[in-house]
Structure formats: structure tokens, C-alpha cells
Length: 199
Length: 230
Image (tube, rainbow over all chains, first blue to last red):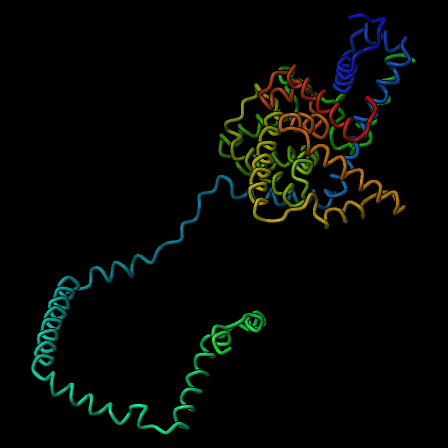
């Protein structure tokens, strides 16, 4: 290295690191810093910049981590360490109840009996239902049609029909509206299908 | 002006700090291969107590290690995470993890290095998790409540000075955040964690000369961004 020239930044930085770590500075660099005012000034600038950065960071963190906060942190760590090395507590499952149910007398025969009864009921139900439909279909259909005839809209007066329509419309509106109070405002702002189609 | 006198101007960092952490020059064990530090001896003692099953005594002794390292750990964690409660949690997690795994501690590494490695890994994990969250949620650089706390704790009564200090801190934080991953880690460990390049090398697994290069580049970049002379 030509010590007649100025020191490169890397050398100055090595010097700064060595000085920070309490290590000895290269004697040639130390001599140069003594002799060269420009390099000495650059070195001072560098160390000041680095130290200011460090100080700023430390001050900022220390302002947040006050002694009280650090004490609380210590207590929290101590509390968490209490759990280290301790076996996890297992909450016992209500095993006795389960065992009693499982070992109850007749517990194995009951499901079989219930299953057989259900199957038989289903079979009987299907058979009777099929027979009833095939045997009485014309009569039932006629009776049904005859019963429905007087209820047809043609038999009702217009006032009754419009009242029913209004009632059903109210019902629809009530079902479409949100039931949550917070959503009412949004609902009021949102166009509805019934309003769009009414236009 | 002698070379011995000039660097002394840069020695203010040790005194400006809280005093809870020894300044680098006075640090009892500055190198991983150096003599065993007091913290390392204590960690070995705690490991022995845990192995014997004397957990109560081990916890009590561990409290001493916590008291010694928590301020420095909090500084590192805060600079990484820029959030008080998250940094607090990261420090707690690191101490709990260290105690839980004390049986695997080997004195080949100084305790400070081992602990800092665990802390930094925890902080990096949290940063990653936060970045994932921030893809979906809006996040802040520093929470407003943290800023208010820093301002309230400021020694300067002048509101203008407080404002300037706050702006400066924000600029520094933004500049540090612009460093690439390794440079940032190395810079933070050096400046806020007060670790030597050799210790940073042990923590990060990088070659010591690589650490020095990263540190130099980080410093040069920061000076470029923040307007320091170079």
C-alpha cells in the first residue's frame, strides 16, 4: 500500500472496527492518520457517522424498553420458564361413563332388534303405500281435483286476490331483508330485484 | 493529533448507551475462541443443574443471564421488528428457547453468540411471517403508539428537536431496511448487538472477511442514503 496517498475507505473502516473491538490498529495506518490531516478528518467523520447511528438506535429502543418494561419482561419470562420441564396436564376424559354405556347388559342385542324393526317397518310402509296408490288412484285424483276446484282463483273475488298478493309480497320482503341491524343500512342502499322488475 | 486520540472520539457509543451492556473494548469475551466468559460459565452451570433435575435452582440462575442480556436483546429485536410488543415477544421466546434447549448447549461457542443466534433467527422468522401477513393487510413501519412512547421518553423538551429526532430515526430505519438481507443482519449485529466481526461470523456462519465486507458495504450504502460524508 502506498502510504503517501490517502487511505482507502476500506482501510479506514477496518481501523474503525479494530478500534471498536479493542484491537490494535495497524501501526502504519496509525502513523498515516497522525500525519495526514485529510485522512484523519475522514476517519473522524466515519466514526462519528457510525456512532451516531448506533446511539440513535440504542436511544430509540431504550426509550421503549423502560426499566419497568424490562422488569415485566423478566417476570413474564420467569412465568413461562415455570412451565418448562413440567409434564403437560392431561384432562381426563369421562371414561367411566363411556365404559358404563359400553358394558350395559343387552347393549349388543338392542341395536340388532331396532335395526330389524326398522327394516320391517320400511318394508310394510313401502308395500302398503304402493298398494294404496295403485288401488285408489282414480278416486283419489278425482276427489283431490273436486276439493281443489272451489279454491281456484277464478272462484275468488279480485279484492281477496289482491289482499293475498300483498300479504305474500310482504312475506317475501320480510324474508329477503337482513335480520342484522348493522346490515340494514347496506340493504337500504342496495337495489332489489322486485324494485327493478316493478319499473 | 495522534491516531490513539482520534479514534477515541468514536468511543462515545459505549458511554451513551445505558451501561447495562459492557462497551466492546471492555467486553470480557470478544472472540468465540477466546477465554470462557462469565456468561458461558453460568450457562454451563445452568446446564448442569438442569441435567441433575434441579430446575428451580436452574431457573434462578438463568434469571441472572436474562437480566444481563435482555436490554441488548431488546435493542436487536426492536431494530429488526420495529414493533415494541413483537420485539418483546421475540426476546421472551428466545430466552425460553435457550432455557428449554440448554442441555444441547456446548461451550465451544460463547453463550452470547449462541443466544444471539437464536434471537436473530426468531426475529427473522417473525419478519418473514409479517411480510406474508402484509401481503393481505396494511402494515406500518412503526406503530403510532411506539412513536408516541419514544417521543414521550425523549430527553429533549423542545418539540422541534423531538420532531427532528423522530424524523431522523424514521430515515435511519428506512435506510437500514433498504440494505439487503445479509448486510442488514451483519450491520444490526455489529451496531445494535455490539458484536465483533468474529462473533458475527460465528452467529451467521459467514466467513469473517465476508462479514467485514458486508459491514463496509452496509456502512457505505447508509452513508450514501443518509448523506454522511464518504
